[in-house]
Image 1 (cartoon, helix red, strand yellow):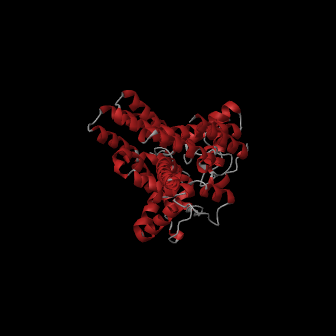
Image 2 (cartoon, helix red, strand yellow):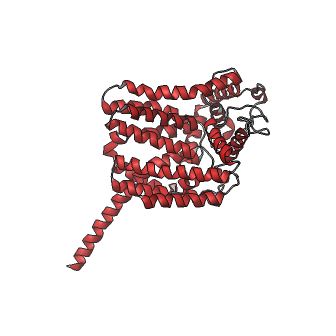
Image 3 (tube, helix red, strand yellow):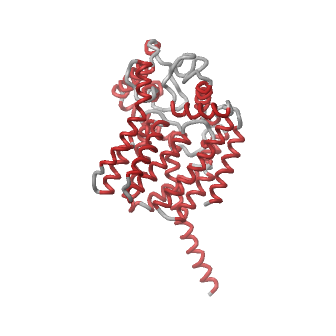
Length: 405
């Protein structure tokens, strides 16, 4: 496993050096441009602001709640210490990417066996999507890291009920939510699964909820002080839901197609009000034409699980896709089938994949939003690979024995 971690570190350092000190948003990771600017501005004392008018409605030097504050703070801290050096940030994120490989190994060993864990770690160390996104300055890396940690701690809590584990679970879930709020829909199901596994209610299970609320409270208070309205964390949801269910998609969703926001909605210049009005408009679109919503949901799922090369993708994007999910998905499906009788033990993984997919299927999706599911699927693909290895080894030795006789 040490060799696997060294391989993981090497591949990610090479990727970081390839992307270098320039922030260009290569291959779908263009949000790193926004986060890098926000981090730099925060380090220079300008808060979460942009130096010029910014997508989708943000004015220059004005406060905003659209982009992840946790990600902006993370880069802001790095730039405060090292200066504006995106390459250093990439190298730090590369270390987090290696930790993801280690957590995939631990999760697989906890659920399956040492052999499955080793193969899972090997796959994760070379999995091109994980390698690439480990060194891009977007939320994927910290989100996946703390999501896997949350799953690992939850599975440990199934066996050993300790107060310290509940605190660690609360901490990891809190950080996960701060980097990607969409996971909040999964949290209650994870806690319920722990109850189900232990066959009793444990009052300590309230610790994670209390920690999450306390962590979100400062951001909610900030939003209320700025906008005068209640908004938990970010103002993205209403916008992406409206844009993702816009009637001019004409039944075929495309992640790069964005529509101009009506001027009367933007007139308030209030993030909380804008996202609230857009959410209402998006819901009206769904109610008005549920058939169109169904078509968009299906085409969003197509986009979400695309594993083939496409003409509108760059060479590097197609290469990443084909050398990662394109190779893994048949084995992952096979692994899920082979482990179907252990559904109770594996239920939190299934629940996360279903809920996470559902959230993006009804709103807005891009291939990189599937990355956390890729990480969860890796142990299943390792199960299938080991099964096939054993089957072919058995056939080989039988044939060899017959030939020898």
